Length: 107
Image (cartoon, rainbow, N blue to C red):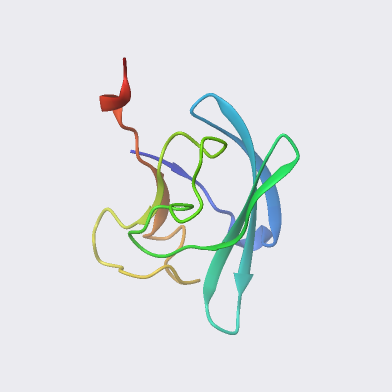
């Protein structure tokens, strides 16, 4: 599976990424007091989500998703299934933001 690489040493930082043939801007932030990450999402300069918390095993943006959002689910997951939380110690070590490709939507 493909994943979005998060460079923790650059946080807070912004980057552009193409998902399902559309360009998005992600901004990654970290809350050191409570050891969690959030992402903001923009498309064409429009803010779509702010402060979306990375929760292990839960696809991003599911509570606010509409047709402006990426057409593929993005989910924090550990393929080895050793880690079960998204923390400073696990993100980009064992837990990655996987892009869940689904070919069943092809027409």
